[in-house]
Image (cartoon, rainbow, N blue to C red; front, side, top):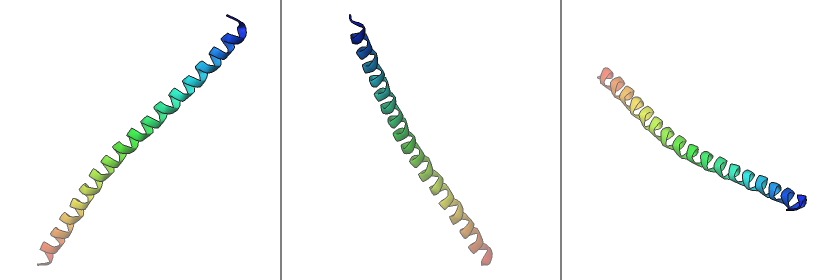
Length: 63
């Protein structure tokens, strides 16, 4: 194998390495966003129920 061939193989290896990193990075961001949305929705529903409970308590106190 000529040194030039080795150089191109190394360069190609680095390109593949970077592409793999980018793909993994994008997948992790995608999954993180999905998980975030799931938890945010859960938290919002919790807050809504807390607010409803407070309003109910307030209304019952008024009576």
